[in-house]
Amino acid sequence: MDVLVTGATGRLGRRLVPRLREAGHSVRQMSRRGTGPGGVRGDLATGFDLTDALAGAEVVVHAASDPQGDPWEVDVAGTRRLVEAVDRDRLRHLVHVSIVGIDRIPLNYYRAKYAAEQVLLASRLPVTLVRITQFHEFADELLGTTRRGPLLPVPMGWRVSPVDVADAAAHLVTVAATEPTGGVVEFGGPEEHALADLARAWAAVRAPTARVLSTPVPGRLGAAMREGAAVPARGARGQLTWAQYLATAPPPA
Image (tube, rainbow, N blue to C red):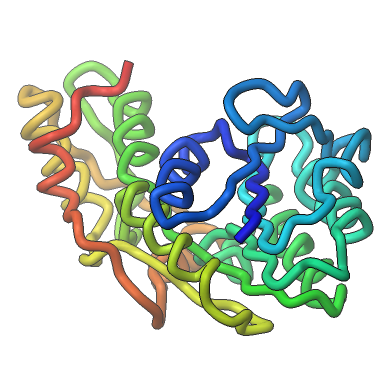
């Protein structure tokens, strides 16, 4: 199939594009500059060149996001622009990459991602919304920035299920080739962890002298995470465990 990937240069997109090609698909990578093999120009923030970029696409994997900037402009308004620009005569499936817990965890970025989902559900396009747990690499980086000298403070009682980004990419290739569900599916890691246990395993490999310190986090965010909002309730699971990731992955740069 003719597949267009938004966010193709991101953490997930870099693993997803080669796997789509290995599966026999023709893949275009959309970015603002259109650089790289198979690159096409298209800007979700402005709508510039979107119609040309999306022309003829049978499958769109929408993995673009802006967690560090303005997600309401890129994730929500940008998704609305994408909906308006797709080739409805050719489109067979629009796969949207989302996050497990966006309907329960009270963060501004998550609220924006949830709003983007609503745009797609109201679009009458053939969609599947794939909510994925946080990647191993993200957890690795986050714990590294959280460490304060000999202490590694983590929220008490939070539950997580990190997943390998390569496993997520492989799952998206499978989803893209199946019939749209018209709703939400979830994908997470093979194991559920207390965040403190996750941190202790990380410290044993990355910072053996660090001591994990569990600290209570009050409010709605803490309650949601303790109740397992970031853990998938159903759906497929990846294969690579957190311990296996730590044993093979180099420390983040």
